[in-house]
Length: 331
Image (cartoon, rainbow, N blue to C red; front, side):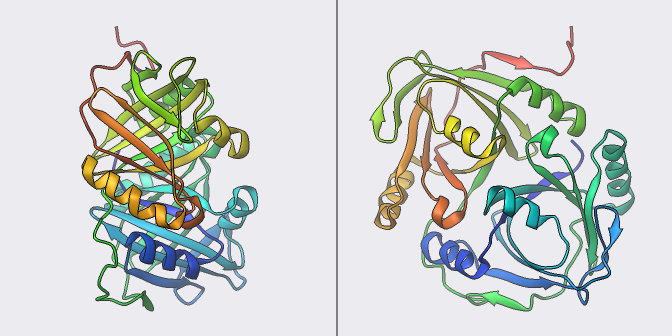
């Protein structure tokens, strides 16, 4: 894939509450807050039509390591965010691929359009341009592309530019995961559209996964879910397909359909247990946990505060995959 994944976005219907929860409960921030309006955005197009009427959407961004987190709340006027909020409510919306060279970026976007992924929204703010492509049916999410250009100072910083973090733990996001209903279909599509090919595929079954708990109850037999992973630069992209037995993925599919499911925070086991204990004070619980080889996972019920599920994991070593999937037979 050309470029790097440098941003993950969550759409919200109440940005003030969201930034407060991210900061006070998780120590994520401070947030640079900007209103995107006709005064700050130029050449703004939605679904091929230049926007002439008044519009406003709020973007709040913060960096956690080398990943930018973005919260967006639409306020008025045309944009693509209304549709997603009406269909799914607040939640994960897109990841952003940054290609710094404007000519290379434009050519890459044109290449995606030639493959059938049409631009649904684009515009410039200062030296930064964004292109969203309509890729939900093919990739299970919206893809944004941009040049990562410099933007002027934010109108507001919440809770303040030099605010002291209220939580010592810092996110170390190393995985973006989607739940899908057909892992092979989406592996093929990611290879075709974005050039992400050569997926490590594993079945998580009683033979591979130990100490497996769902909603606090041990599960010892009769389960299977497929995990396909691929490194995209420093970020791991994961596709999960539930097959049978208890898991948190099937319920997501039934309620939401295919889509972005969680972000994974890599940190030591001791820190995971400490964070799970601390967050328990807010009624946040471990929804699912288990070990495969040296790797642990803990999904925690952060939806009410982060509008997404956060996964903790130790990033431990996993043995060889069941097989490696390529879009085309390489033999």
